[in-house]
Image (cartoon, rainbow, N blue to C red; front, side, top):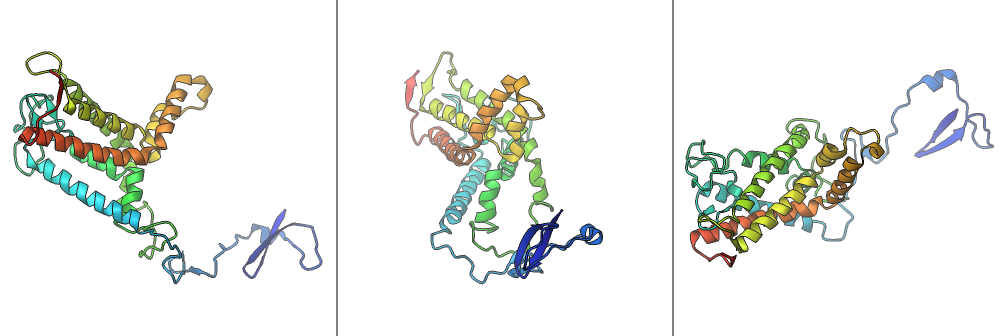
Length: 308
């Protein structure tokens, strides 16, 4: 039997039946069955359950810089991506088969026939992106990603803005209420994002085939391939409930009986530690790939051809 003795703000644990000169521990059957009240620190605000600290933070470094940089980067990227998604122009280079990932798969009736690898069935209206069947799922996949959640919780909601920095919100409910409870759907968006990444890969491979026949290689091909590799790295390193790790190695009682899946689980786990780097790298690669395709399509620059 173990007895907990509360004295002021201090708690002492003693074994029942052991007596000391200053304090003895007596336990009755009634008190042992009684549920103890939770220990509340004298520095805790009972109404909010949070520590009452006068100073916002005791940190002296530039803790505000990472969330500020994240805020600026996210706003700039979303603004660029939104403009490009609704521009409906300069998304395809017919001479070399370059299709920007922002328009893949291109399924609008306004798409180039050569770029519409999966048919054209959406109406060509200004308010509907040519890749409307994929963009919403890609957006939801990233919004519900563990790393991005941390990033925009800090940068936009200040919840909290940084470690050891008080946030302006009085209460914390976590992700237990609408709409944040929908973050749990990330594992399903993971599978859809994987399919879309395969489509991007298909686009990149087709770009090596010259429209008139034969093999062609240019700087645009290299950019498309690098972007696809980074997209796979980001998707396979996915965090939420470790979706990819669960898919390849979950629901197993004995790894030793499933060596192939254990090997896959090990490799994905290594990628998992680099998820934040892939998250930022893919934002850069997507923007660079789209801008390059737009620049070549608009005639601003010429593609650097290596073969063909």
